[in-house]
Image 1 (spheres, chains in turn orange, blue):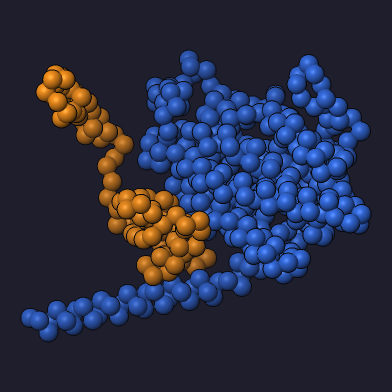
Image 2 (tube, rainbow over the protein chains, first blue to last red; image 1 turned 45 degrees about the vertical axis):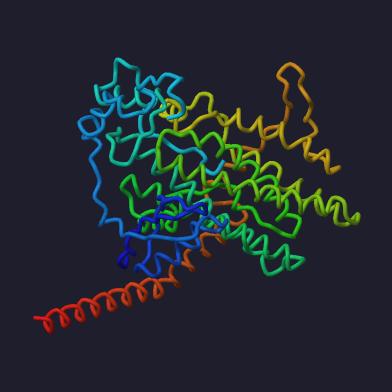
Length: 94
Length: 338
């Protein structure tokens, strides 16, 4: 068995000026081919206006076990949301 | 259903008392509809069963291209040809989404391909039946993709994140497949008497193989109980088969075609049709490799894999050479700057 093509993660910018979003992955020998393949695999129905490809091994990620310490602290900081504050109607639109 | 008779590893679903703390926490997440993601802890049985199920599903998409690809060059009009080409290309895409999902569980693409090619991994029995004429292409879209959708729609809610996301994408694209098939059959059913006869003949031949797609009754299966507890199987085979029959009968009636089943009858009590079971002896025989096209399909896949080897190797060698050259150029530029 010969060497398998590396795995690439594919990010696509949709029509409406949104950020690139992860849509899936695929195998390709290099970045150029990854983009060509991504076009065939992930934009057959006009889903995108731009493609990013990143070789999967270059992505660093948080570990599932870190979920609590990393993300729970923000749960107690409800004052970060505008709805935390009661502004009297008389003050007008804010 | 594209995954038939997927074996789970355990001997049925464990009770709460039998679970380790990790297993209990895992089951709690599933019960709360929290998705399991690749790096989360999961029982070995969950991982293995999913690899088998997603792999089988992916192989079905890939092998499923063969009976239809067979008709691309012989489609009756340029428009039909373009449509069929787009559909077959979708099937390749669906296979790729699913292979990627399975790879997140720790199996490589090549391992899965090898398992398919040497017969260790299965694909849906339906693709071992031939497509003899253009009416069959219509019937495949209408019935086979119709049955696949029945199974895939609930799987969008499956517990494993990457599988669920692949299914959502697939379902979005799949509905076109069934409609184009029905459109072909409709054209023929409303055409000349010969064309209508061809449409009826295709329905006659593909009806029972389509019912087999859901697999045999699994009400006593330990594998099903575990898979359902893990939410990698959402409905029983019988539930899905019933739904498929109830949906398809009126569609056949609209076309003026007859479902080839003398026992087909509306049952008011269950608000569904009573219908004949397919020949399960034939089903097991096809699974064992003795269907009309098993050897043909595997020979075609093996040939494509073997004859594509030089392309895979060549492109990799070219990519490595290019990367090497780039490194050398950068190094030279760096040295010149110093």
